[in-house]
Amino acid sequence: MRSRLAPSPTGALHLGNARTFLLNWLLVRSAGGALPLRIEDLDGPRVKPGAAAEALEDLRWLGLDFDGEPLLQSTRAPAHAAALHRLEAAGLLYPCVCTRAEIERAASAPQEGDGTAPYPGTCRGRFASAEEARAASGREPAWRFRVDPDREVAFEDGFRGPVRDRPARTCGDFVVAKRDGGAAYQLAVVVDDAFQGVDTVVRGDDLLPSTALQILLCGALGLPVPRHVHLPLVRGPDGRRLAKRHGDTRIARFREAGVPAERVVGLLAAWSGLGNGGEASAPDLLRRGFDLRAVPRGDVVLAAGAEERLLGGLRG
Image (cartoon, rainbow, N blue to C red; front, side, top):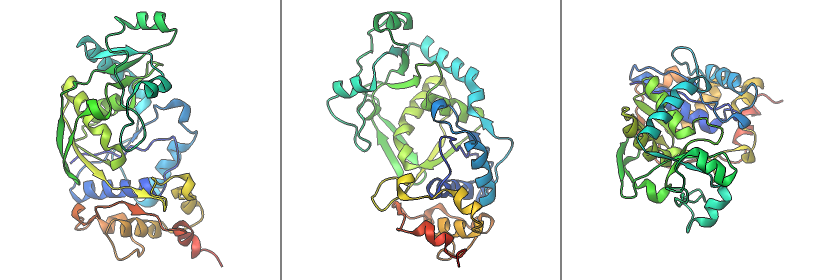
């Protein structure tokens, strides 16, 4: 087994994504597999200075090691550009000058789950080239992948079981290159997973809608399709994915306050049906006899004040 840890430096590592990283680590290490690390730093304007270094420090503090040197995704631009060229040469891409507001106005219904609309195909067949799109609109075009309207993608998820998706209905033609020419998330992930030899992708199930798109790209580029394992999320009391609005759950907060790493790992383990009811633990202890089937099927709800209780033992 060869998976990867792929933190993004657009924000701090918090209890929610740390739990996913822990389960990823346990799955791979219990199988004697390899776990390289990739910093997904392509979202330039949102990348926070120092966030990548802080994420590495958080992972090491938690006891989640990785193999080899971290790979900066931004250094992979030539490989991403080569993949884009192959897709364009195969006639699978087209330039798009639509704005988000235009897409939302043109779409007939929102995409279930996240309130966004599937792309209605406004620019499909509209321009013969990027130059024509640029001249007609005065905008720099993005590039979209043509999705077969009749294509159904089916795969066996390592946690959820059988999954079926029809990308034309849930997403539509999707962006693979941004207006600045850089690769979009879907393409970069596919190209870099293949480069790093990743055969098992473990991530939160908020990214489940991306999987069918990435499988389409693997097929178009002749790349192997990894096994996918989508895990339930940690959510706040309001049912929304864990974020700043639910309090300060950053791993760095607990590390800098002197909370023992084992106490944090114990909480993550308890959420995952592992360990001894939240008692302090360590990844090396949890990996003995680890079984993914022990992880609860539903999302975890962060109880009010849980982060404060982690800090409680340090206060007089």
